[in-house]
Length: 208
Length: 208
Image (cartoon, rainbow over all chains, first blue to last red; front, side):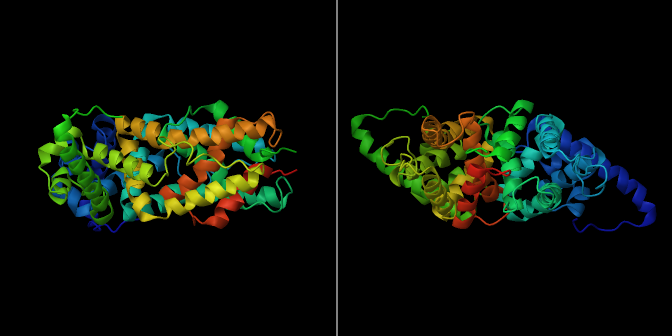
């Protein structure tokens, strides 16, 4: 994802240990002190490495947190990017049930601090920093959006949804309201909201 | 909105001039150097005031930018808070037409750097800083969301939309996708998108 110095095989094991310690330190500090006060120096001290070790691998604290978050997501199979089978979109043939399952799981993630704290930090940093925002989009958001697209395209082909449906807009209607409530604090974010959202998106405001 | 020292009448005119110079400096610097690199010192230098003048009135750069943005919004009647008549939601009796008009105007705002640059900065800052996020929600987002709520409630009472419609969810379906594309860069943000979004929200994916 980013350009890293490739360590020699002998140095590789030490590097792996340092890298994991840096990831853990970065994620812990994002939750404990907040992203705004996070520094490379504090990550280095917590991880027990020199700060030059961090600067050698990552240009900024945002890049450290992004890689630490991707590693976390991969290990907890939140991200489909490296293990598409594990996180594929459910397809039971019942579109409403499948969407509610996925949106409820997303609500749970967004309410889980170990996931939500770095995800909020990266969302905010990406809004102000276009380079990091592009990497956040490519590696975190886009893989998930593609899974919605695949499931909704299949639903359209089977006649579960209107043939005129724009799959990108349908995806936005399902994903954006959760993200908006989560980032802007405009209302509660729970399973009941996820279910009602799916019902409103499928039926529409005018109704059948 | 925030607690300010109330100047004496004689000092008031000088204060008003300083305040306006600070607002203009803050907004110009957000666009020119970016919010991340913005400092109280730079705002003071640009505005021709001492930095203690700024610290006396605002606790942080985020608070300066928020007040400058609210002042901008009030002057350009973007915000309904201080002039509800000017920015009231259109009600022609044609819900789809009214929503498209408003969403197209929102798209134009979000594509206008003088509005979008401070709004992005405040969105990002509010994600990381709960106190500022709460003020951004109260003074920027909530007044606009209430206008949607009023228009959609009227539409529900007249039978333009289903009686079971949850007005808060309907509002999210119209507002959140624009915000999501704008902040996350997931797709183009233009009038065609606004129109297609309204059509999808009103008809639903399953269709009539």
